[in-house]
Amino acid sequence: MQEFQTFVSHLECSYTGKRYPADQLHGLSEAGKPLLVRYDLDALGKAVRKEDLRSRLNEFWRYREFLPVRRSENVVRLGEVMTPILPANKIQRELGCGEILIKDEGRLPTGSFKARGLALAVAMARELGVKRMAMPTNGNAGAALAAYCSRADIETFVFCPADTPKVNVEEIAFQGAKTFLANGLINDCGKIVGEGKEVMHWFDTSTLKEPYRIEGKKTMGLELAEQLGWEVPDVILYPTGGGTGLIGMWKAFNELEAIGWIGSKRPRMVAVQAEGCAPIVKAFEEGTRHAEPWQNAATIAAGIRVPAAVGDFLILDAVRESDGFAVAVSDEAINQAHRECALKEGILLCPEGAATLAALKQELKSGRIKSNERTMLFNCATGLKYPMQSEHYSIDLAKPIDYDFIRDC
Ligand SMILES: *Cc1c(COP(=O)(O)O)cnc(C)c1O
Image (tube, rainbow, N blue to C red; front, side, top):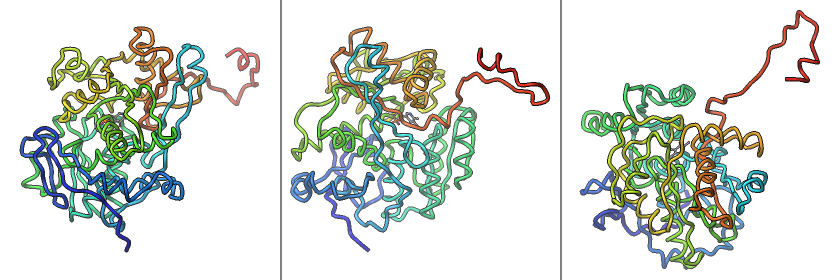
């Protein structure tokens, strides 16, 4: 039983800065805000060198010194691969812009980057003795929770909006979570989890309401920097729901700079939302630090249908500090980008990933993204979980095959 070398010093309220001890079970801070894990970065920087990573497996546990898990026996592995960065050359040429890179997170276990966060949350839950976990989800987080918890012998309760994509609901239930559909949105489901804590004795694993999912999502920032030779792209477009990934990557870049692995250059962080649910965009435009809950949220991109995010100020802070922005795209533009990327690049995005391509196209036009900037789009999940609008034709084997028809289709 090997011990990981870890450098966690304490947890810190992201709003007030108040310190909390590590190695205890925590939800939100007393101020009702997310807790962030803090490390002894001096010691971390001395303990590991970039070169040390080369001999490690191509999985995100290669960054273990940057993560809070102390005992390797608590890690639950399902194949947490480093995800490829794919250039979209044809679309780039057509748009006449800088390099477009797509980080394809659909290759991760359970087919989405939620695996990063939940792998960490479940490892820490084991470390801290949690036996029962619950969460609200639009689909992918629930699937990842169910998978990791089944493997870790932790009981799970998952609450989804009634119109969550069917494949997600089935996946969650099939992987062993007790699965419930509620006739509301993710925030309504979150309330069931929060208010049930006393009677159900479960651990609330909602986005940013526990401190460790963000540490898992942080590995996206570490990983992309390593893959680009310890460089960062000029712009990162991130489909933003709860914002864990955006906040996590921002944290990763700060930690990497603190230990001298990257310089002070940061990507401009662009939070991409759907026009039918754009609370962060509204707050960005109005210059506020918090977002008002979005009414009647509706978009085909279920993963970013999040009317209210507990980490709203962390998303907005990162976007503003990085000189980025928040932008909304229409469902129509999402559908168009979805199809375009499949046809031209052979990359099957999820609708949320397609939203980042739609946003890139829109903002190259508006000039907020410059034609010499190197951009990275996040495809957060495999496109195979989502409906694909496509044409196909039937053949009646009782009749002669009509090759003229086939040619002209
Ligand atoms: C969860 C999810 C998002 C949003 O990620 P956050 O980090 O929570 O903002 C985007 N796309 C997909 C497919 C998701 O599952």
